[in-house]
Image 1 (cartoon, rainbow, N blue to C red):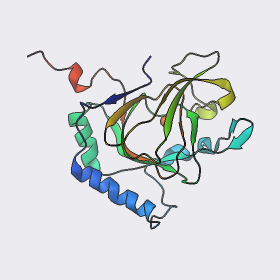
Image 2: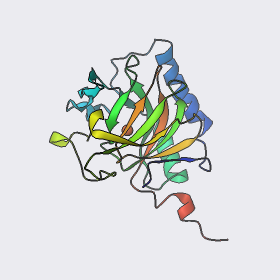
Image 3: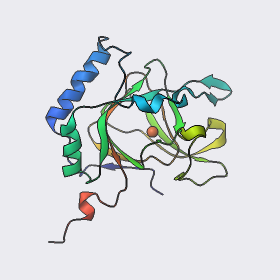
Image 4: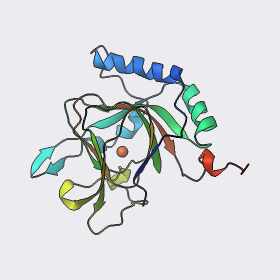
Length: 210
Ligand SMILES: [Fe+2]
C-alpha cells in the first residue's frame, strides 16, 4: 500500500511560480497578510469540518487547516504539461492558524492523490504520519464524514503505519485516502500542491521505450 513517496525525478516547478509563492508567503511571515482573506478553496470550509476536535492522551486539541491560494493558471498548465494530463487544483497551500502545532488525522476530501512541493517545512521535525483506523481498511476510498464532510478519525482509534519527515524543494506524492496527520509544526508550513485523480498517467508510465 502506497502511503507516500519522494520523487526526485520530477521536474522542479518553474522559478517564476516559486517566486510568486514566496512573495505570498512573505506577507504571512512578516505579518502583513490579511488573515481574513478567503482562500481559493474557501468553499470546502462551509460545513464545519475544519472545526473538528481531536483528543490526544485525553487532551482536546483543534486542527490546522490548509488555505489554498491560486498562483495563476500558468501553474495549472505547467502541471498538465509536465506532471499529469488531468492534474487539478494546483495552488499554494498554507496551513493555518500558526499557533496550532498539528493538523489532525484526516483523508483529503477532494482528491485521490496529492503531489506537494514543500517550500517551508514549518519546523525542523515536522512529521507526516499515516494511520490505519482499527477495524477498517488502510485505504478509505469511499468514506466521507457526515453530510459530505471530509473523513477523519480521532487519535485513540488509530495505529501508526508510516511516519516521515519531508524536506523542502522536492515533490512528494501522498495517498490522500490513507488517514494522515501533520505534527510538530511551529511556523507556517507551505507547499505548492497539485491534485491527481490517479498515478497511472504520470509521464514515466507513458514513455515509449527507446
Ligand atoms: Fe491532507
